Amino acid sequence: MATHVKLRLGLALTALTAALGTGTAQAQSPMIYAPGGGGIDAPITTNLVSKLYAVDVEGEVYVENSGLIIPLAAREIYVAQGSTVYTSEESTASLVISNGTGIFLSESSRMTVTRAEQEPFQGERSDMINEPSVSNIQLKHERGVMGICTSRLLAGTLLEVVTDEFTTRIVDGKLVYERGPEGSSVTLVGGDASLQSGQIWYENEGRDLKVRHKLFFPADGSEPIDTELSGQELAEMEGIVTIACLARRGVYFDVLGDPVASDIIDTPDQAEGITGTPTTPGPGGGGPGGGGGGTTVEPPPNTVSPANIP
Image (cartoon, rainbow, N blue to C red):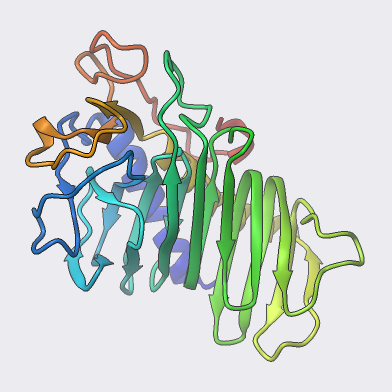
């Protein structure tokens, strides 16, 4: 991994840690953007539409949906289905889908939410570890580097990441996807995921991905290359998924009003459907457990192992 990429990762981790640990992310009713409906603030119809929350944005990052392109703004919430997020050079984004999956996009990366369906949230939720409801999510990784960190997914949930070379199904875990002109790769840092399709099916060890291994699919269609990560490579992959895991802890999703209503959303205060509240230190955060007490997120030490992040 190039030195400037490592620097961008370090800066992204520092910025995200500062936002979560010092209260930069103010608890507020976020704007709900409805791309493609006639304007940025156009009303949308919601039937528990999955949402995409931007926890932290560094540099120039954009979100596109139905022909509308706008700058991605931190601490604001977007319709997930059909949204494409892409980062420019020296830019990064930390995102969370409303099923609790954290995503980190490094510089010059592009990701599209090709499918986003979510059932009504479970009642009496009081934690950010378990998925709030059964979901059906598919992400397409198109270029660059993308880190994934899931919540504890519920039985019946389907979470897939696809590229032009392969499709993976994630049961639980922390993964890094890389894609460039030479091909695509997936690294399972921890957890459980499987290869569902590819140029050839990965049969020599079954279709389950191996922890701490990188599976590379050459763009020319030749046989995938499986390599075990060195200590340095593993540390680099852990750094990427750590940011995704911290992002996942940066927002608490809840439902306003009737979760299956189809009323028009006019303003954030009148919104019905999924909304996200930043988790900030101190009172008034309105996070898990109710009572407006908020959720305290302590800044991590300089070195954070993704294994220690729930």
